[in-house]
Image (cartoon, rainbow, N blue to C red; front, side, top):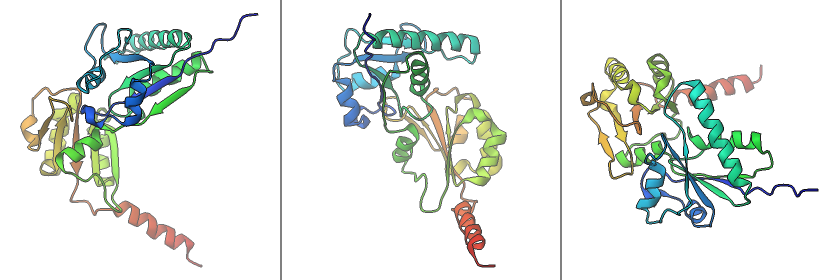
Length: 262
């Protein structure tokens, strides 16, 4: 009778958006725990933004750290094969009994690779223990960088990938006080045209690679028209023409009306 496999833990270590000083103590401890490092790349032997954050923080990269390839494509067949390879390799390493720490830029629970990887790993090996270490998100860091408040008191906030398209963005501008558009690169010109049409360019701000040495902040967003920006970019849009906090106040009024005696 063979012994059952004793898997190591899979740890998603959120590293923040680029500044090593934003890495939490808990993530820093996991990186130095003796767990084997895994880090994402877009293609084999490519640079890793997550790994670079740790390097700039002063930690040496262990000799047995291993890359996992997650290609930048929308081709479902290519993506499925890449995800399968990454998950299978992760399970193989976990079967050695050693913990794995997967390096995640930003926060592991917010539009991150780790959640999908962990889900597929658990499908292959349900007994694997998964730990997620939260971190600073890019939009929180960007707001702090430019001195913007994402939401106060009754105000509302929406965070979406810009790939949802200008029709959805246009609708959300009427529903939320502040809108964060992530991964704005492929939709930049369309978004700029919408903001100009809505008269919101003056209350919008573009932030690229926040917290990194290549950080860039552009307050005159109209000047970005026609420019190719980095994938790690976002737009903060505030709509001062909307009655701030309107949605929540409306909900409270409806709740009060529904609870009033007939």
